[in-house]
Length: 161
Ligand code: RB5
Image (cartoon, rainbow, N blue to C red; front, side):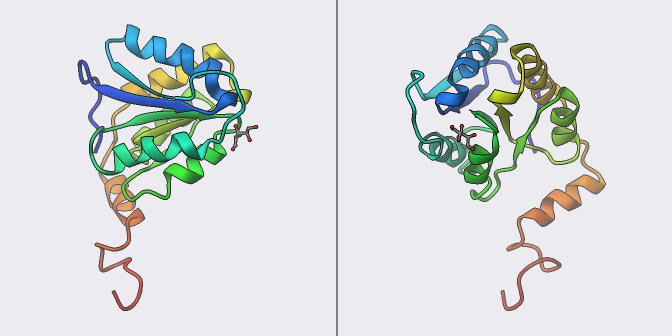
């Protein structure tokens, strides 16, 4: 479970070219809030491939090096496809603060994915704040989140495991 408001917490952030400009703004916003924003790239507007940035960020979340991270691409979809292949990573594409808050409350989302071509800078900041500051509700949602990872749960494990 991800706690909220950890002073000095290191939060990796990454984008492809479609998310680059917004990534720069969110990186500055994270730093201004007191987080250590670790810029995984991309480092310019030249065309690039989103998996090259999603893999290293998701790996850090999956292995517990960091608690959470932020990804951006044009739609948010490619980045989320990659990140959600990693055990323990719950990457949520959020296009409004309400969706971001629900992704935390109900799904304990530990990676925020922004669809950079479909949100304004102002909306993106509000989405980032909602995701950073909203705690997981637990309770019935704890059981459901636990069932996402099937291999350690006899009730949901694939037959024969
Ligand atoms: C890049 O043009 C675009 O395909 C990418 O940013 C992303 O939207 C993919 O899912």
